[in-house]
Length: 198
Image 1 (cartoon, rainbow, N blue to C red):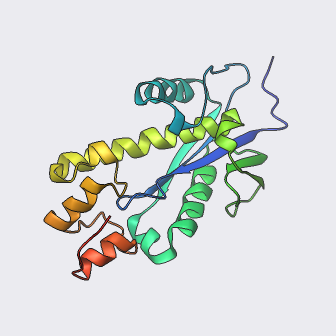
Image 2: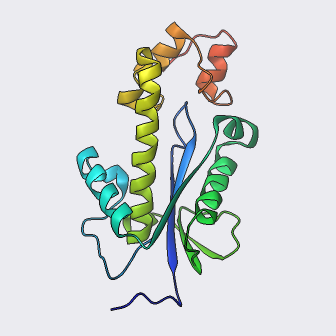
């Protein structure tokens, strides 16, 4: 079966709305029906080993894929929802092959030049959204591991920037980093000199 160039559908998802540190990362993927990938699922339901394996397959077999992000500064100035939308629209715009239609995980669509449909729980329903969630998650996790190499006291390799007890304790002990999202309450409270509580 040859790829039908008449209807190219991209799946889009983002990773990193909840963490206190780092960018929000989005991916857009157009899968190739001639090169199916078994086992695609919501990235959160996969082991890290499985995600890494599927990440390589997606990059090898997808018709087109792209990653994009919105920075900590953009998150703080726009808010996390709008920054997430910005990252997703950038991912679609960066696709080497442009789709005719986009499926987005969630209940809102970013501003795009093509038609878009929001699908709640889409990363468990549509393979192309699953693929986007996987490569976005792997890319962001790699960013957190790189940040861990610079600031090992914060444990970014373990919690990936999420507001765990260990992360909150590290902020309290070692302070707020340039990579922290200042608009997020636990970071803001620390900057204001208030103690962090669970």
